[in-house]
Image (cartoon, rainbow, N blue to C red; front, side, top):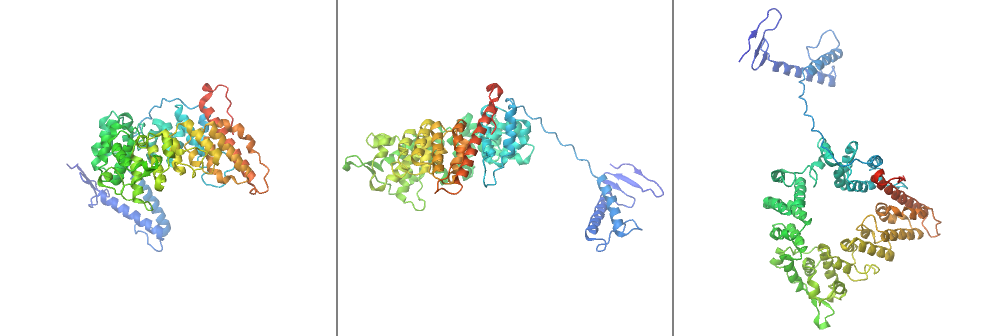
Length: 576
């Protein structure tokens, strides 16, 4: 339909409004006029950039003026015209109201402390001499863990800095996102830089509840990989059977690297109910998936897989009857057949490792540890580990038993393989590898772990204790803390620089019980240096101990502030 035509005389333009736009009497449409204006503006810009002496301005500029002045006048005129012709943008949809967070608010002092920790989180990231001041960034994870344990919610004003800290440090994310709570996730949805928080963390509102099967199915089929991993973990935490069923719906079509990570998520809450799925994964086309399935099945001593591996391993390890039954004899496999490969045994050893040794280790580490007392004369784990092994197979056999003890979380075998802490790592039975010792130590109950570590440090010093200290419960039990401090004091008296012990000193700042601070006061004084001491070592040690004491006092203050005045009436906050 066409609207009526309006005609005027004289100098007035005759226009006709149609369904395709506005036309002038001369036949020029609005679109043409717009195009002409755009072209003119582009010509003005080119003339301005190149100069009027090199590029003549458009001919329709106002006359009677110098070209540069006319160019500027025309630019001003067209600028106003362009701005006047802009279409108003549609109003943006306002964000949804932030969700409620019913957790209790932080005490005022704790809120101020959080602000200091967040502001100082990168203060010591540049290296160099640290001085005696505590490293606040290293204390932020502890503060967040303590705040979450007491059920506090993050102050609204601290959420941006908290999300920035979590974006910069992945180690902070679990504690930081828990502390940020639903309001933190709401805020993260408004800033693309905080998108990591929306990719799903078990227990956060970004994931649908496990009972909402339709939402779970949709996210599982359409979500990003990180979201799917988080979803699988969240569903498994509530219903392991539902998680396995969910994984089974897409298992054949998943990429090999994704199948591997999905399978690895079954470690949490692993049970006999997972055995059928894991047995199926033993036939996977990916070697890494098969190996992971075999590792998980070997952690289930009652599984059919464990029985098969026990039968194979038992044929390789026995007592030497000709020697009076007091020596272990090993007959390693001579081939890796298809059945062994189907059960996850890798046929090709790494460079520098013999084939038979490689196959033996995989069989023994996958066999239930309960196989060996009956197989080796009814002996206890301690007695079995102490038995001599013929033909230099002891290292391979003990290393495989170590891996089995860690995988099966067997504390008695772990203690036997660790051996007495007073024995030098290279001089006893079991394992001499510090990495393996740390893994075995982590299996022991916390009290036994602390006692063993303290005795080890007392006997051998700190040079080989760093990995062992890393698996001790925090704060360190009194025997561990005392052993560490005594060893540091001994190293100071020896006149060496403290830099050789910077790793242990850093652990002590984070892990020593804050109650140890008064006992360490005596070590902050600068000692007299012996003649053979490194120049200036005493001053450096004094500075390191002052930093340690200051950090312990700060940690004590942090805990007192989080307790609040209600829980700790009259308790003074002591600032470092």
